Image (cartoon, rainbow, N blue to C red):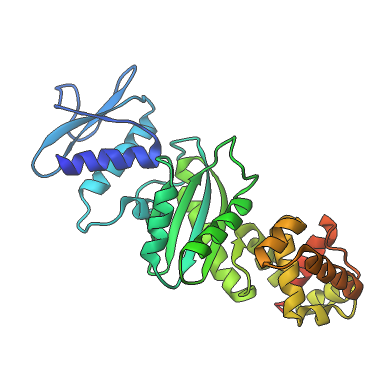
Length: 313
């Protein structure tokens, strides 16, 4: 019975559906589901006890999906974290939307103290969030996107999360941002995006700590351009001395922090532990060399795109 209760609890976490456990009734078929006017049910057995799982939904596809999930938990031959199994796509099809809640989806990488990362995220998580250790170095974190929270985007939340984790845990923290999943069933897809962003980021921008999937989707598209086209872009939109900035770690760190903190001088300087005037001086120097004023959004995006293309040359 404990195993069934656990499966029902995990169903609630991955779908938002609160199910009830009761004794079987004659009108619930052993091998299928029973759809009623206000609720539905199906019978399961954990090897010792047979019960009826009743759901407050009447959509056949949703009930069938819930039954599949509960059975997958009960029939697991090895003890696997159900959240991890779900995010890896083993329990719920991403094509079926069970819940409509939006989530920020992240893959958090740390080469050391992976359990500390998990414990920290689990402690800050709300009952509606998902946290799971996915590998020896990666922890998944799906944060419910509240309408009244202090963060305008998944990327902005990732910046704060990375800074907080770095203060609490020994080891380099990097975060892949999958974006915003619209509904619980999309979480596996967006987790795969976050994981992909980590891989791409390590290859193209190893000095950064935050990697956005959407940005690296752009990299993938740019990487398919002919080499001559990429080189022509660099020469056309940037001052010929741009490579001087690329080779200056101090200037690139300043540019990266400034762009990462949404072109906010105060937040960027604070994250770098430098005086704001120091950061302003470095931004001015970048403009003098490249001709791009990265205080301006368009110039900042041009600078960032050119930097990513230059990594492919």
